[in-house]
Length: 428
Image (cartoon, rainbow, N blue to C red; front, side):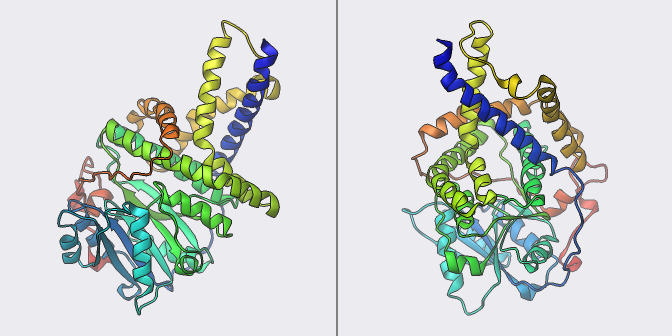
């Protein structure tokens, strides 16, 4: 009986060993000190800053005001807000705050991907031309140096760039705190690490900079539930990787309840399965044909949800194996027990290093106690996402944390209070 199960279990173990070593090795390059390059500080790039907004009256005003404060020449960037199928006064608030508002009504093609494609066509028809588009979500806040950092990367020849995804409300609840922790680790141990060794990062939905040349040549064409991931993979096939701007910071609002987090992550899981099913075969053929490790690495990224289900199945089987041996355990034959110990310890040490690097507040350290709940909840979410992978119905995430950028500069818990430091238009 054991030999029959070995046919399944041994390949699974080999896969787990490969993924474990791969993730652990990659992550090390996210915390090692890297050579500092000389920055291009002279603004040379013109930007169309685009915000996709659906019923975002609670937060859109703060973002537009924040965008006007960016340390970049006013003449070199314009702010566009897509009021997409809005039933509130998002358009009025955005217009009064000083943005160019485009109102879209389309009940059939709903979702951010469709809204962006519609807006790009409007943008390209304008007399004024831009070197790049920068995309934000309506709930975001943006660091004053964001466009300067993107200008630096763009002037060095990078065509698709993802900014650092921070959180504007990491201390609201344990859910937003765990979301923040997961994004901080992805920033350092995945995106920054890959960028440091020449692999492609992955677009994160907001804080994205894309060359208009790339958009004109290859089109957007990303309208699924995870349009950012779809465009990343589409662009890789076209020979354009996604680069990483560690110091171009955008502050994203994280949901407050476990139910909202469940629904949001379920949408991401559905979208990733959808993208994976369509792009893994293409990336595999192209990667082998071109001998391109960057494309093969992208396959590993898309395979993550599948790997989570596979590793969960293996853990269940291993638990049963403790009482009823029914396969050959080759894990420790491939890697010595001591190596597994190092990797196991590293799973706790690396997140701690990231928290130290970002000078995390005591509350963020406290939320690490709840982080296993957040992580393991991905298992049922991924399973459900697999069965719902053909469901393309877009669900809106409600945002209502109307926080100004000055509140992000100095958290409310700080001794001096948020109003002691004020960033204004005159600080440009």
